[in-house]
Length: 142
Image (cartoon, rainbow, N blue to C red; front, side, top):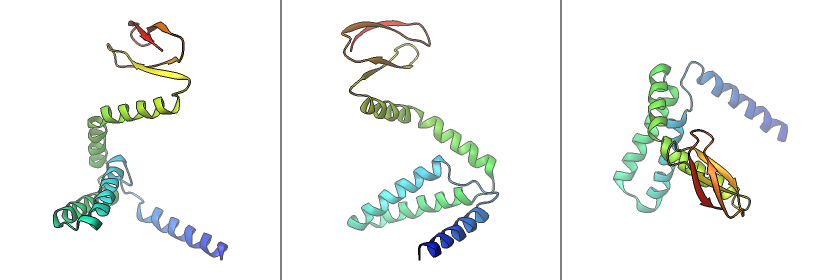
């Protein structure tokens, strides 16, 4: 039984790779549209709103359009624009993830001049921090 499932998995993988050959594929914008569409689908299960359902259909359709599009250069430009627009929230989310992961041993600060993330050891008291990128100095408590 397990061997049969593995064979079916390889068949599906081969079919998907042939179907997506020469296509744009799953980029960040398509993944984000899929994630939002999934959230809207769950909301629509409880709310049963025609508007939410319509937005779900449009987002899911746009995501499929992006995945199967052969105009890779245009989809690439759209994805780069999306990444440029969402850079600030993504950097903030990454900083929050790093702060949570290293919360016991490190503190993270952002340079006011160049916005570089700086990690310093925790528990050293008041220290002078020098930004490695621009050389700006500031005093913070760790």
